[in-house]
Image (cartoon, rainbow, N blue to C red; front, side, top):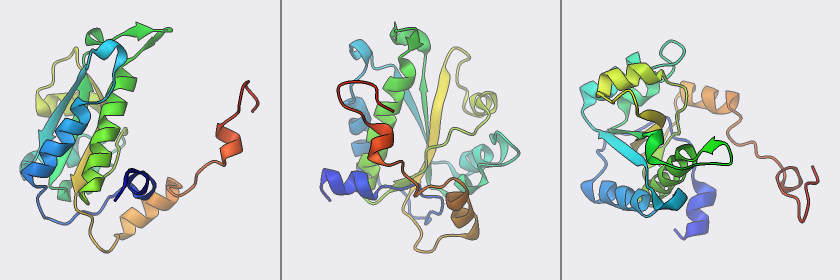
Length: 186
């Protein structure tokens, strides 16, 4: 796949086969994050790769923001938690840039994974303190996002279909709603 095909075909995957993500793919994912741009090249991101099935199951069942909303990740062969210490980043225009920096690096990681046929699903609905406790993440570190990674199952589960419909996953705003030229014109 070329870059355009990767970007346009990537979607959130919530049903994974049990096939492990190969070390070569993981290495490519790490390199993709490593070369991402960041404010003043501070590279504040830190990624925790979890492939222990028992630890993944614990994350799935004990880190949900609302009950066990993340239970679907329990069958993923890999979960990555994207973090940063805000003090390791820039603070410009009255905003912390670690959020932007980590998001760019994590997205590049997801696109590289998709290039290899490995799907992901950006998660923001999690209990940060519970994830920190499970993985031993220091208090000063913020968790920006986490994602399961794995090869997509051929058939979507009822849960996956329902969540995709609820989240309006295929809905995209028209260009005129997101872009103006020269001046603000929305």
